[in-house]
Length: 167
Image (cartoon, rainbow, N blue to C red; front, side, top):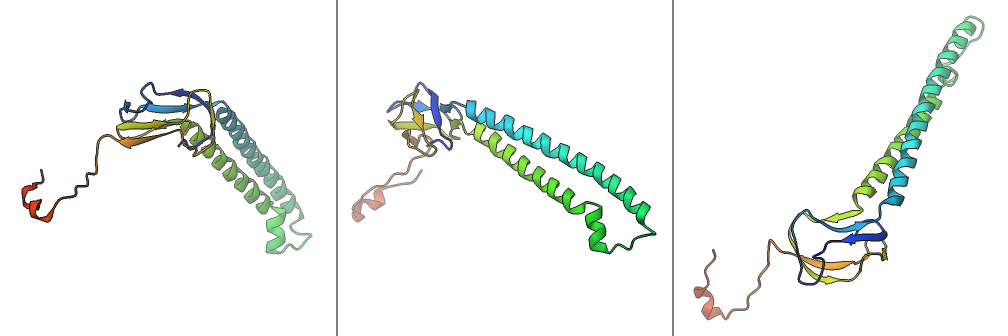
């Protein structure tokens, strides 16, 4: 089951019932085009948020100078001074940068998820999809089982248990 959806670009040549696929090899490749576009858009949002921070820092410098000029003629309490120095606005654009960076990380993660690999050897039990088909995230494309470990269950008469040895 792929973690992202899209058109199946390629399947491993041994992704057939009875096929053996070594650990780490790409079993399934989802077309990454829309995910690449999402990364590009997220990178632009990060750049935009960083530019907003720089602009806000510049506005703070101007606000500080204006407040210094008015220092003797106007009384300003702490809350008003924070507003005048644009502290909430700076926190807001910094938060927007955090959101943009998270979206970028998510888009990069989705690109990595367009290649389905497993960290162990597998034996293919069933294939439910072929190249060119569009699949949704978590949709079944086939069934595999681990080929490096097996669970064996035996039914043995109690009188024969002494004949079994573990190796």
